[in-house]
Length: 197
Image (cartoon, rainbow, N blue to C red; front, side, top):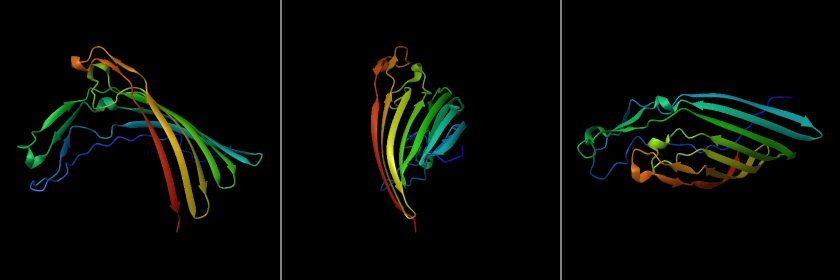
C-alpha cells in the first residue's frame, strides 16, 4: 500500500466576524476580540492509504480530531472608539471539548475520473444548559458523495453532502424559554472548475 492524499469528507467551517461593516458616517476602527482563543486548539490524527490493483485505484482515509473548545470560556467583544454606540460585552461560552471523526474513500474508476464518498461525525461542544437558538448545537452527521475529473490542465468536480443533526432535547437550559426539542439539517451542492496554466 502506498500513501495518497485524500480528503475524507467536507467540513462546514465556522467563521467569526471580528470587524463590523463600516457605516457611512461611523469612524469604525474594527472590533477587538479579547481573552478568546480562536480557533481553539485542535489535535488531529489521520491516515490515508492507497491500493493499486486490477487497473483500478482505491484510496481510503480516516481522521480523528479532538478540539479543546473548553479553552474558549468567553467571547469578549469591543468595537473600540465606538463603544458608546455598542458597549463592550462578554458572552460566556461554557463550551466542552469535543471529538470529530471522519472517513472517506476515493476510487479512480477510469482514467482521470474519481468517485469520492465520505462520512463525518462532529460532537457538539455546547452543553444543554447553555444551548442557544443562534448556534445549531447538536451532534452532527455529514454524508457526501462526488465525482471529479482531472487532466494535465483541467480540473472539474461536483459533490453533494447532506448534513443532519441529532434531535436536541433541551430541558434544563438557563433560559427557560429555550427548553424544547430541536432538529436541524442542511444540504450542500458544490461545483468546481479549474484550469492550470
